[in-house]
Amino acid sequence: MKKILLIIIALHFCVFDAVAQSNLYVGEVAVASQSEADRRDAMPDALLQVLQKLSGQRELPPVPALDEALNDAERMMLSFRYENVERTGSDGDVETRLRLVAQFIPAEADRVVQQLGLPRWQQERPSVQIWVVVDNGITRRLKPVEFAYAWQSIEDVAASRGLPVSWPDLDEEEMQLVDMRLLWGGFTDYLIERGAPADGVAIIAARREGPQWVLRWNVTNEVQNWSWRNADRELLFALAEGIHRMTDEVAASNSIAASEQGLSTVDLRIAGLTSSTAYIECMEYLQTVSLITDVEILGADPGQVHFRLRLNADPGFLADALRRGSVLLPASAGSEYDYVFVQ
Image (cartoon, rainbow, N blue to C red):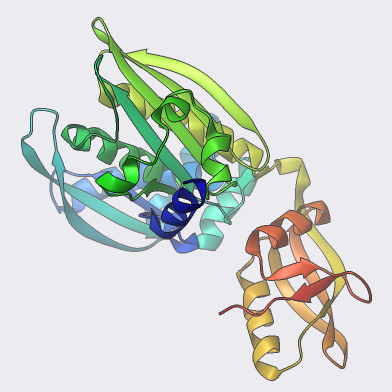
């Protein structure tokens, strides 16, 4: 049975919003209209959202430098567009909301983060897989459809903070294989043993107690485990507050402090580059790692290349960044890393 569940979970996990690096520089803000005045008024809020995504900070320091940056938001804008977004309320009514979607120049936004002395949440962010169980006093169900508006709120809050999240996509038969007692108990290791990603799992156990919804959160990644409770009269608000806290914790575990940011250089040899295709793909991968700002070739031997990497933070962060990428593996001898062919 365990083997069957492992296969099912491995096949059906799906990420709905893996945050691409480019999306970290996009802010989405509700606006009343597409007028120039409304756009100008909303632009500082859009930039503020981008700064929150990049730093992982929910609250930014109220300093003059921040005010100056927000007042200068329109100059830092790269492009903008509008979207009509439909959302279902707790009463079942569907509302259409107009959003301004503004993309900012990455170098300008990064400069503001540095100027404010903010930590930098690394852009390689594993998705946190969310399992939510609701106890109605009689049964416990996984992500009941009648609360679809609340699950959408999880997606919205997570996206606004730059946190990638995913849901398990299981049909009714597959759900029967899940041990609801262990799930309700918050045993994230139970899910990880059966195929859930070890770099990010969250279990939300929700139950109505009198006038309030009481939520118990168990979150884990490769670095840490967190547990807490929160409550609110509205499930929507309780979930939003919990997602904010989860983002705070996950971001803090994967951030580079302002004191650890700055230019540095590291040399390393990469083996397994036995073809031009492997070399090109390795170069392309290195150029996508946000920690690396420049790649220089120092020399080459058969199947091995000696690189010099210029970094924007302390070299100590490089090993973790490469490990998360799963493209370069620590070598046994003769080089620091071996290139792994990516299908």
